[in-house]
Structures are given as C-alpha cells and as structure tokens.
Length: 141
Length: 141
Length: 141
Image 1 (cartoon, rainbow over the protein chains, first blue to last red):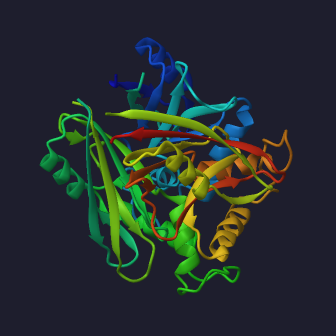
Image 2 (image 1 turned 135 degrees about the horizontal axis):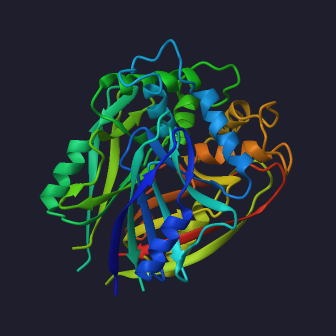
C-alpha cells in the first residue's frame, strides 16, 4: 500500500555556510518506519539552498563556501538588488546555482546516499536565519 | 487513493530572461482540485531552464539575468558549438548551471512555496521561443 | 494500480567528461514495460554528477566540459581540499553546480525528453571510475 508522510524541519543557521541535516532527515525516516520509497526535500526560501556534498573532510565544505564567495562576491558594482543589504543579490544568485529541491531514494529503511554523501542547507545570508525544510516521503512498501 | 494528473503548459518567451509561471501552475492545480501531494515540473529543452527565485522585487530577477550574461557571455573565443548562432553554446551552459526538473510539495490545495518564491522559465536564447513545461501531479489525498 | 520499480545502473567513465546514459535508462523502462509515471535518477557520488543537455552535436558537450574546466580549474592556490589530488576540490565544486538527482516524466512507455535532450553522467575525476546511478520508477498505470 502506498503511504504519504510529511513534516517540516526547522533549521537554525549561523550565517553563511553549509549546515548538515543528514542525520535529522534519517532520524525522521526511522520515526516513520519507512522501509522503501522516495524522499523529497524542498526549501521554501530564495536566499538559502540545498546541496549534497562530501561529509567526511571539512575542507571540502570550506572550498565550496570559498568558491561561491569568490564567484558571487557581496560587492559588485552592477548589482541592483540591495534593499536588504550587500548580501541580497548575491544570495539569490548563489541559490540559483545550487538546488531548491532534492529527491533521494529510500531502501531498507534508510536514505540511499553514497558513503561520504551528506545533505546540507547552504545559508547565503550573512546573519543567522531560521530555515524550513519540507520533507515528503512516498512510502511504497 | 493515489491519483495522477498531467498536462503540458505552452509558454511564449520574449527572448533572454526569466518568465514567471507560478500562477499558471497554481491555476492548473485548482482546476484539478488537488489537495495534497507532489508537483513535478520538467522542461524538455536544452537552451532554456527552470529556476525558483524571488518574485517580489524585479531587480532580483534582473541581477540573476546579468550574472549569467557576465559569467557565460555570448562571445567566447573558445566556444566550438555555434551552428545556431552566438547564443548557442552559452544557452546550453546556462541551462546546465540551473535546473531542468523541479519538485514542489502541494498542501491544502496549493504549492507550498515560500512567501516570495516564484517559479520561472529561464529563456537563454536571444529570440522569442515557444517552450513546453510538463506538469505531473501525484495526488495523495 | 501504483507500482514501484528499481535498479542500479553501473557506469564506467573514462575520466573527466560527459557520459551518455539515455539509452541505458530507456532500455530499462522497456524491460519493465512502464507506460506512464515518473522516473527518478540519483547519483550516490560527490565527485560526479547528472546533467541533461543536447545530444546531437558533440561540440555542445565539449563546450560544457571546457566551461567547467575554466570556471573551476584543477589548480587554485586557495583550495584546501586536496587529499586525493589536484582534481579533489574541483570535483566537489563542479558537482555542486550541476545535479545529483533528476526527475523525468514517462509517457506512452518512454521518457518524455525533448528531441535533442540526453541524460549524462558528468565525471569530474581525472581518472576512470565506476559510478552507480539509482533508477526508481513510479508506475501510475
């Protein structure tokens, strides 16, 4: 029988950077006892995003953060969208280059991630924010 | 009972830039009377793409467009793919950096977007085009 | 009746570049005789990714590869993540800019791709690798 599970995670970010949510999502799947199906993640924000990346060596994350800081710096003379400060335009551009939704298979009661693959909320704002992650699970068992 | 709804939106773009399709998708969900489930959007094109971004201040969109114009300009000496003109290689590269598919939760009969979050077709071709957006809805009610 | 199909494709890449998997995925759908529904692809790796792009003219693919090689070159003085060699940090950054998951509609027993749209594994490592692609199909017939 096909079942549908849903919840909203509330994440506190500490300003710019990658925030690991892998274990939070995994714990939720265990609570629901989902054995097999699909996990859909959606971020209802436009100045943060979702990213999957290496979760073993912290320098991998540091390089992702530095890359975006260099490619889309806060101060560009041509930005026109700065109502909320110098991190305004750059936040939306960084979000466009990464992801708003992710779909991850569930097998044997767990996310089928690679060995060193983690799920991150990428905060693009300078200051800490409360972010929501909508979790939807299609349970095919 | 699980139901499946589908349609194809036909969008006329006006050359390069972001084209808002949020209300078109929402109207379709109301027509189908879908209360809860998942909305899948897919763009069957390689020189346009899908993007979610801020829908309140038009300068946010302008900066996204300017960013891609600067990062992937029309004229680069190293482009080899120019059969269809100077906007050929750059279109495919811009599409690669953004999205071809999006998955958005539906709750209480509406897309669960953030307050200022809109759905856009990003046209990467210089001239106007007719674009298709495949809409698939998994109705879990 | 809703059905669920799944398999894991094993792909051998030849070092950096785009590897076409469109026909492999299509053949799998024919084997399962899926007429209508949704195809979910997931790559459980952090130094390779998924991309949809033009499949007709090989120069289109060459330009995508050259673009990433120029935007995220192997040698940058500021990279800190180089435990596995000069292609380490750049691989994760390239993966972040492209996709880990794709969702593609299935209609009339086939993927609803555009005429010149192909599905690729983008290898970001210099040396050949074995990569997995998790294929999940929601059969709505």
